[in-house]
Every structure is written in structure tokens, then in C-alpha cells.
Length: 171
Image (cartoon, rainbow, N blue to C red; front, side, top):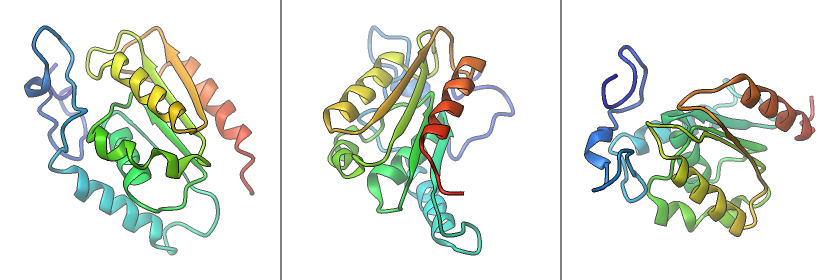
């Protein structure tokens, strides 16, 4: 497996994970970085969400897996896009100091956060820190740790379906 994931995998930008592995660790820590492609990717998502030809008026649940979760977090914590829910699957903190300044602004947005305890791509420990910081800011977090790696197992899908059902989105 290359340092940024599986061969033929999709990405918004190259993460160069190997260059972010701290001394004495085996998993990258991106929490103090601001990836070069993040602003562009988040801007594209924001543009899509603001285009009423693409997204009709109504509830919006934004989410992503891995790098997509990073982009979704960037949109949630650095923009004013209206959200009814945020889904972060195998997420990690990036630009932590900046994002944290905006956590309280999303207190009314329920967040679903799932991460594998054996994830060797993005740190479970950092995902736990993400959850703790969101909790401390008063964000309603549904935390779904699981015994697995960088993946979305069936138990997460079931928990995510329950989370979305509980949002009581207008249909």
C-alpha cells in the first residue's frame, strides 16, 4: 500500500502521510498541518452546497470518509454553510488550532464520528482527541469506535443509519 492509501484510490490532493509521522510513532499526525489542497476542495464543496440548482432548500447532512471527512470538517469548521448534521468516518484533525476556534459555532449540529481502533492510516488517538474537543465545546457527538482499521464496517453503517434517523429531517 502506498503512503497515501490503496493504489487507484481517489483523493482531493496528495496527503504525503509518510512525511507527517512523528518520531517514535508509526501513524501520521496532521493536526498541525494545513494541507495545500484543502482550501480548494472545501471551496468546491461550499460552492456546490450554495448552488440551489444542485442542492435544494432543506436539511443538509455533510459527510465524508478519510480525506473526505477532512474536507467535510473544513467546511463545517471554517465556513457558515448551514448543516443539519455532520458525518465523519475515519477522520483526523488538521489545522487543529484554527478548527477548534469554531467548534462552539457548530454546537447545534449533531456530529457522527466513527474510527477504527486499529487504523494504521489515520490515528485513533487523534480521532479520540477530536471527539473530546468537540464534546468540550458543547457539540453533540455520537462516537462510534470500532475494532477495525481504516474502513467502514457494517456496525458503523448500522450506527450511522440510526444517527440519521434520529436527526428527524423534514422530508
